[in-house]
Image 1 (tube, rainbow over the protein chains, first blue to last red):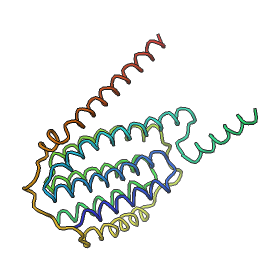
Image 2: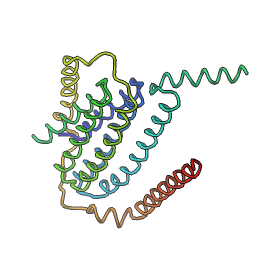
Image 3: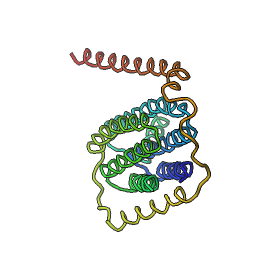
Image 4: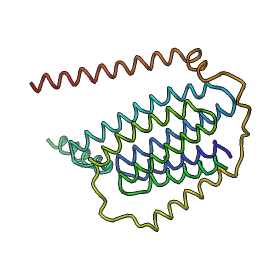
Length: 105
Length: 153
């Protein structure tokens, strides 16, 4: 059983989701998977080496992860409230249209 | 054997979280991912981290359920059971390399620095700084809410 390969597979799934999915909630799920892959690597390597430093790092990494989650969720709520959509490509389109109209005026 | 089953479950639920169309089902699959991760941690001897993962995961999922239910509209077409089965098979196939390849070997788990020592002796500065950051964020949220209420009144 190799946890490095397992975390690599999780990382690949997360990056695939980040690149292909357009819904903000799916992007959030992908970011969570990438964070889980990184923390899995930390914990498994540290527990197989018999050292608690990796686990201690992980507890700190959790708070960073939670902060990232809070920022993404805040963005999701704000964008949905303002434009009524949660699709990244449509948000980019709206931004481009807005820039174009500003340049014309 | 337990570790192999847990890792297969982890990869399958991660695939389902990405591929399922409806947001609530995706969040349920992510809950499974968190559960399998914390079980993996617990079975490899990192009990504290498993507890942290479980607690943080529960909080994140509660918020995600609410936002997923409120903010996302239902997809026009329902996901076919056959495609869900295909995703499960793909997840199972993806978990095979982790089960059968072996780059590292497990070492002994008794020597070295313990979790408590590492957290409080080696990383105490980080813990205090993180506490300060969290306090500042809480203070900021409080001020924003106070100003908003003041503006509304």
